[in-house]
Length: 270
Image (cartoon, helix red, strand yellow):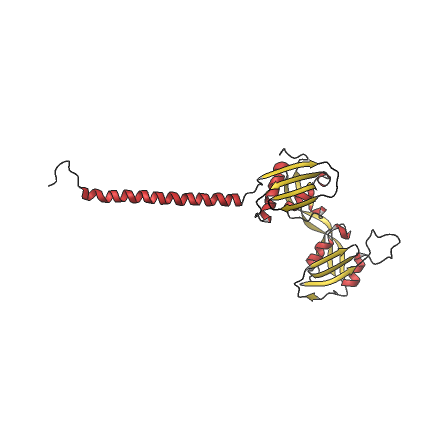
């Protein structure tokens, strides 16, 4: 018989142990949650889509050209057109004028941009941060679309290509007006180079040769802006045919471009 009001400690002891275990469990869970939150905060900081600090100003110096650089934790655009900034942010070669469709002033107005970024930030993330900066300060809105443009198709001439594939791995491209020297370059890379303004073709070039591998070759031609007293030579069209067995054919094709929907000329204040 157990007296009324007495306590049976034999049954309470397990409850006391259970309570202690519960406190220990809660403490362990709290530490785990704190570590998880800290890890997420670090990851969010590492994947930030905005610069820590950024200054954007209109440049009225009238100098030309501008420059871009990244040194340590600083990204600097000096006297740079908005077209160039957009091209860099979206991975487009700045000399592809046809690849960005927008108002004419994006090529003429110049800006100075200085942004602070952790030195270890990878390039793809820096470009995403630059995209965010342009959207915030210039209210830039754009979309990608296919636009039909005049193009040149790089094809193999009637007599066949005068090229021999090489194993590589050297990869070099040397240019001076009227001459290129190439080592281990593919036909895609050649078409990409020929699209640049320095070749004076005025239209993008697309590789339709069907040639695989990489090649070594030189090409000599007479640029359109050659001095009147210079010895005349072949045009780049003739040089490609005679020296490499390749041909440029005029065509029209869909080309992906960035189309600007809205952009402000004066950036918002820093």
